Image 1 (tube, rainbow, N blue to C red):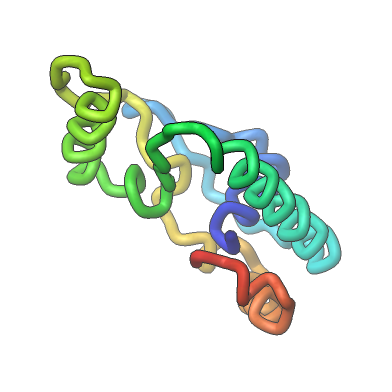
Image 2: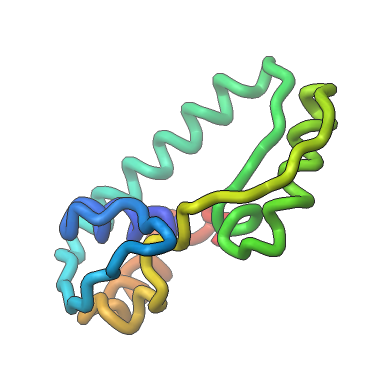
Amino acid sequence: MFDRTLSVLVGAATNHWISMADSAVPILSIDISQTEFMQTVAFVHAQQVRCAALMRETSHLEIVYEDDLRQSESWQPLLDRICAFLEIPPSLAVSPVHQTWRRPYREFVSNYAELVEAFQQSHFVDTSER
């Protein structure tokens, strides 16, 4: 949940949501308001709860970016799982889209440690998978 929240806020602050293989990634330093961060954590948590309730009765395959898509080595096994789930022939996993930020958030979110501390002190840390 921490990483998802940072992703939302960094994307909104920079208007940089995806990177293609040949795109330049801006070098920057940003500061995220602790209040805005915690409000967004609450929103992300509420969306997770809502989605879980909607999917409870539906056959589905859960895919979590941080676990399933962050590393390109995991794409093929994931696509194999998806094809098997959908009962369709396997396909080759390729994408021109790359990880949006090639540097860890802690390197360019100037108050990263403050946000980590706020998250760890919140009740959301107990409901988070990350």
